[in-house]
Amino acid sequence: MALGWKVEKYSFRKGSLYIQISPERGNECKSDLDCATGGCSGEVCAPKKVAREIVTPCVYREWYSCLRLTSCGCYNGLCTWKPNPEFEKCLKKHGIDPSKVIKLPTAEIYIADYGKEKPSEEDITELKALFEELGISCAFGDIEFKTETTDAPVGVVDPYSFDFKEALRVELEWLKEKGIIKISDEDIKAIVEVAERGKAGYNSHIGWYKKDGAYTWIPYDESDNPLLLKCIGKPFELKLPEGKIKLPQTSTTTTSTTSQQTESICGPGLILGLLLMARLFRK
Image 1: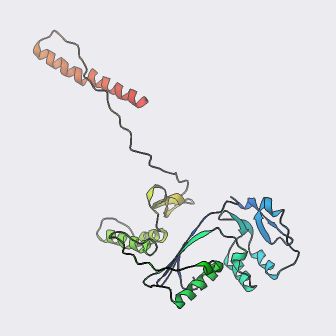
Image 2: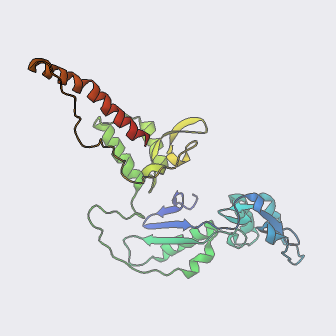
C-alpha cells in the first residue's frame, strides 16, 4: 500500500511494527436485499425494516455527493455504505471520517512493536497514519501499550510475527532441491501466494483444485463444490464369530479321510466364511 506497509489480508507489517485485525461478523443482514436507504436525502443505510422509520433533518451536505461512488448493501453482516478507495477518498476530501459513515463490525486489534520497550514517536505517527487510511482513526485514542518480554519455548513460534509464507517457500524449495518432490518454481510461487496461518486440515489445506472451471493452487474450501469433512472417530472393525466348524465324519481310509477333510476346509468351509462376512456387511 502507499504508506509502505506489507499487507496480507488483515495483517500489516512495517519494520518492527505488526498489526493483526480480527473482525467479527455482524448479524443485521445476509444479502444486499436486507438493506435499504433512509433519511430525508437517502443518506442513511440501514436494515430494511429500520430504514423506513429513520427521520433526519432535510439539510443537504456536500459529502452526500460521495454516495454515488458506492451503494447501500450488506457488508460483513452489516447494512452500510460499502467501502472502496474512491468513496473513502471523497469522504476525506469533504472532511468526513469514513468510519463515521461506513459501519464496520467490532474487531480485535493486536499491535506489536518488536524489540522495543515502548513505541517511538515515529512508530506512533506510522500507526496513526495507517489507522486513518483504514478509516478507523477513532479507535486509536483508546489504545494502551504495555511491555512484555517473552521467551518462546523451542519449537513454538509467535503467530503474529512468524512469516508463514517465507517458511513454506524455503521448505518447498528444499524438498525440490533434494529431489523429494517434483514441482516447478511457478507452482511454488502460486502456493506461497495463497498460504497463510490456518491453511491446513481437511477443509482449508492448499491443493491443486478446480475453481471456476479451471485448476489452480487454492485452499480446498475455495474450490468448486467442496465437501465439508470432519473426523468423527476411528474406523469401525469387522470380526468373524469365534468358534470352529464341525465337519461330518466319513468311513473311508485314513488317507482318503485326510484328503476329504482338506477338500472340505478349502471348499464348503470357505463358502461358509464368505456367507458370514456378507451378513456382517449387510448389518
